[in-house]
Image (tube, rainbow, N blue to C red; front, side, top):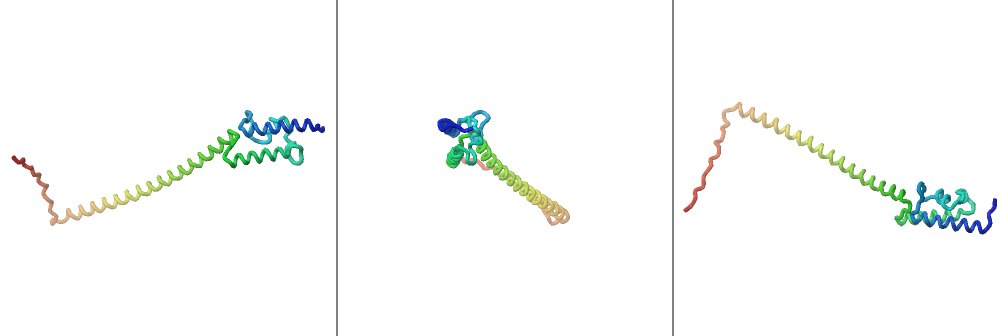
Length: 153
């Protein structure tokens, strides 16, 4: 069924108004900032936005404006903005986890080296004590004397 020029103009005005609302972030519940929601908000058949259909130029205009906003760092769809924010936060947390895991691995290696060194030093001390117990040439030093400092009058 064909529509009149006045109906087409009215439909285009509704589509442009819906584009403006969506790009301002006025997303209806359950909707997104996309062509499907645009068509339902403008009460126009979604297929009219594709190919050589009458509103294909409005779809292109909508997509270009949306892309320009996204390139500028503006995301009109609150859910998309939340997804973007959560992905960035997730990446930060992954990097932090990787650093923590590397630190734990480094500290575990250090602990193993320290324990091995302590065990080797203990074995050396035991060996030296056994060697010293077998010889009479080792003499023990006397305990240090404590001196009292007298007061001057």
